Structure formats: C-alpha cells, structure tokens
Image (tube, rainbow, N blue to C red; front, side, top):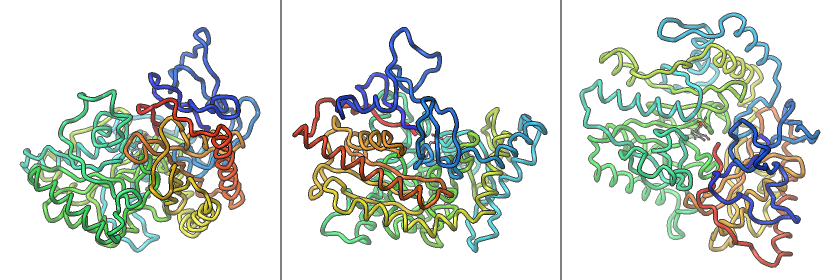
Length: 504
Ligand SMILES: Cc1ncc(COP(=O)(O)O)c(C=O)c1O
C-alpha cells in the first residue's frame, strides 16, 4: 500500500514534526484546498493520497511515475503481490459464469471450493478441528460473525445468561461496532465512547516486551497472565462468559508480537476448564503469513480454537473476502438447535470474491509459498535484527515468517517511548517511502496512545533481493530521521495526536 494519511480528520496531522523542511506527510500525499475536494471521502479531508496507476509483483507505480516497493502488502494483505494474471483470469471467468446470487436460495461452486480448500488441508499432518467456513467481506465482519456465532452457540444450549466477551488489552479486531468493542486501541475508540458494547472485559496482553518483569522468566510471565485471566473469569462468573477472543500473533496494535511460549496452550486449558469458547483472530497472522496456514499450528497440539477468523491474505487483496471457521462443537450446537446460523449478509460467500480467494489459495498451495515463508522467515528476521542491531532507538524486533516489526523507543534501557508528537514510526515510514519502499507503521504500541512500530509484511513470493532492499532502505530512513532529530537538537514533542491512529 502506498502510505497515506490515515489520521482522524479532527486530529492534528500524523506528522507534525517537520522533516527536511516539510511536514513528512507532504512526501506522500497532496494537501487539499477547499476548492479542490474530491468526491471520495478519503481517510483525511486535508490530503489526497497518491494515486496508484498500476501495480505488478511487489511494485506500485504512482500517478507521477514514481515506483514503490511494497514491503507490507498494504496491511499484510497482498500475499501474492499485485497484478497476478491467474487470479485476474479466475475472477473474470467467475464473473462471466455467475456474478452474483443470494445465499438464501443459491450456492456456488467457488464458495464451496474455497471452504474445502481451506478446511481440507491434506498437505500437513495437523488436525485443526475446524469444520465449516462462512465468508464475508472484511476481517471486522468476520469477527462480528464470530461473536454472534459464539453467542448463538450458548443460546442453542439454553445458556442465555452468557453475555460477556473477554478480550485482551492492546488488541485490534476491526472497526465495526462489535469488533471495535472487543478491541483495545484507545485512540480509535475515543470518539465512540458510550456507543460500544458494554459486555466486554479485558485482560492483559501477551506482551513480554512491555510487561514481562525483570524478576520473571517466560513461564512465570505466562503463569501471571493466566492467573489474571482466571481471576477475571471468576470475577465475572464463568457461566456468564461467551468467548475469549485474541489474535494468535498480535497485529496492528502490537506489531507482529508472538505470545510467550505456552500462553495459548494455557489459555485453551483455562477456557476448557470453564467451558468458554476460544475465538482466535487470525485475520492478519493467518493464511500462511507466519509460516503455517494457521498461526495457532505453532502453539502446540492442544491449541485448537473453537472459532477462527481469517481475512487479508485470504483474498490477497484481489477481492474483499474474509472468513469465519467453526469447529464441530459449534456446528453440532447449531444443528441440534435452530439448525441455522442466525446471521447473514447480502454479499456473504460472494461467488466472485470466493473465486478470487480460491485462486489465491490454490497458487499459495501449488507454489509451496507457505513453506517458502517458513524457510525464509528466519532469514528475514535475521536481516532486520542485523540491520538494526546497533540502533539506539530500536527497543524490540519481533515476528515470525514474513511478519516482522520494529518497535522504536526514546530510551532503550527504560523502554520509554517517544512522545506522541514525534511520530517516530510514521516519520520512518515516510522517509522510507521517499526512498521508494512502503512499510506499515503503527502507533499507540504501548498503551493505545504512546509507542511506535513499523511492520514489514512482504508478499510470500517477494524475492530476497526485494526483501534486502526493503530492510536496508528502512535502515537508511531510520538513520536519516535520527540525524534530523539530532540536528534539530531536540526531539520535537510539539503536538499530540492521541486520537490519531492508522486504521488497517
Ligand atoms: C487481527 C485483525 N483483526 C481484524 C481486522 C479487521 O479487518 P478489516 O480491516 O478487514 O475489517 C484486522 C485489520 O487490520 C486485524 O489486523
């Protein structure tokens, strides 16, 4: 994705810090005047992002002729890169065969085949336990569907007192009212205070970098998180809880942060102890992004969620498609109850978006791209770690597969983040963009307001040369920013934008 201004219209510009004599957002977007307003409601009313006129592989071409190496696939979406002609042909063929039918009365082979392609994973010896797929158009919708499906599971069993979802702090599950209610990105939620679901409780993030204490080892940290979660279950009353919702690997809020070892197995065991459903959100980290189809495959054989949500890489950006997958336990409860999922959309299981998803998933399978991500993932991680090893403002580098993030701090020793007027991550992104590389920035990493990170999420078929270019360019962008901040002999903290956060 070509970086674009994504801050809320009422917030100060994301890049209030002046870099190279101009506000850094001027590098990649054009200021709009009152008389020059496009009809399209862009993310900002002040700026118009660069128009992309063509895209091929990992390269985006902008209206003004500049070329950008897309090292983040938008928001970890474009897993095959851009302009894949096989996917385009599959979409065109589906459009000419059946462009749309309503799922109340009809089915299509593309949606059935996509569900089979995801759920019948013969190439790996791993029983995920998931039986059925439900397709929608975005990760947020998939999470809303999952929340409703989990509630309906209990309704069918007559346990209608179960009304509470337990989610985690520093999480992101989407922007619809439901998905946002179970998310914890303070900046995005502020304007909607009072309108979100009240029936959500939050427990600590599985975030060792910020929260593991110096006197704790990893198992002790996990134990503390699990005790906190159990205490919260007991405080609420486990018989009132619908599900526990978490990203297997944190995405937008925390930047590709894997959970500490043993965390998910312990959470699965805790959910089992109290009969609470486990919903893993793999919208960002699933569909091969971390080197296995499902991220939870790496968390141990006992970690089998009741519900999984997928998005982004499912359609690879070729179509807006996301999915909810449910296990046999949930299917059975629906079957023995009302026999129908009491939820639906006009565009659910859309034949064309499913054809796009199917084409993408088939290519991923045929070309062994998940195995490629698995085998090159550590190389990518090592490249980033080596490139940023000596950087005074790099606090943490984390990730798996083709999903790596760098967290920037003002002080490495104390992990103190930059003031939110510095926009360190946003400025690194912009300086990298100026050099022709797009990476994905995140703000509010520490507490929803403070903290900066940058995420790399290249296409699964990106060449090593492209990956190396992305990493070295990112390093030069970082160096330039540090130099500029030093030259201005201050770390500017002039403006705050606590409401300003990038929306995937
Ligand atoms: C983990 C996770 N869940 C849900 C979503 C929401 O997906 P969408 O933007 O497609 O609604 C995102 C988007 O970044 C995400 O990262």
